[in-house]
Length: 133
Image 1: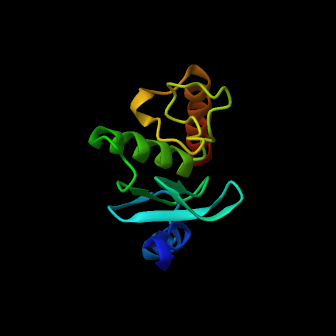
Image 2 (image 1 turned 90 degrees about the horizontal axis):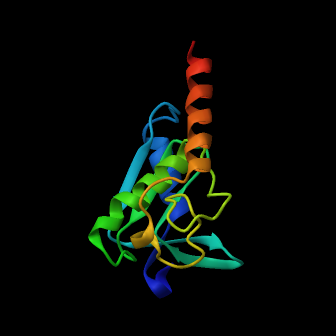
């Protein structure tokens, strides 16, 4: 998106997916310092911190909107867990890493997964283990 010098996150995900042949056992994490965007909240080219297909084999995270360096791992885990199938926090717990950002950078407040998200992640892992047997 040239007017704001943003890169389309969906195009980055497609490129990362194609690079490793769509192997869903591998998640490719793209990291960039550039501004990235997607269509969300009724807006086209909306600036975001990260994006993942859910489930998917790739995610992309940008440091462009991060205010604190230690938030990078939080955004990366958030997007990685989406790629494994975990949705946004249904309880909208303020400290849960899977809480939807609601157009705000609140990762400085987050420090783990709430109990509901932990249970959902355990179910996803158990399902993967059952399908592997």
